[in-house]
Length: 182
Image (cartoon, rainbow, N blue to C red; front, side, top):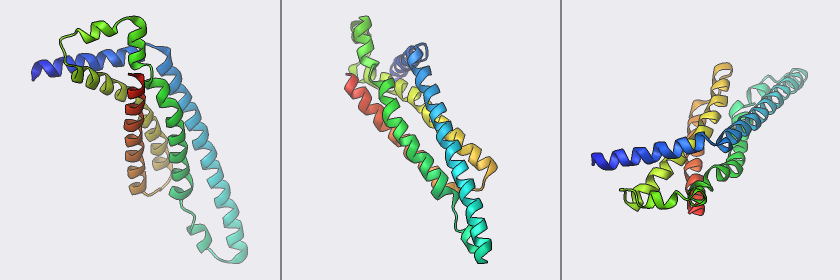
């Protein structure tokens, strides 16, 4: 078992190094953070404008309950997670679809196939390495949620399930991109 774990870790580390040393991963991560920040900022500004206009209307109608009905989770968090999902659909294939194709292009596929690991270990190691690279996108999404948690008072349950859902989407999209690459 120790030999299997060591060989898998080497494959995982090799895949992570290959991705981190290529500019593609950095470009995708930067693009994601830029677009996610833009979506986050615009959603928060829209929510603030909605609260302000609703407060004015509620004061005019003498109905304070209107402002209390506005929910940060329904407006900002749901919109933010929906935008993250769309970004993932376009950005994760850029990271994953060149996994095995790059090995073939560089001629290192035969070296990997003759390594003292089983094909299952090879696939698992490369997949887990790719998953670590695409998992950075979920960490980026969690950063924007942490900003909301620090400055606002959203409900934590929907946020936790939303982040788990985004993580599962990343796992599925990574698997699909990885399968297409083979």
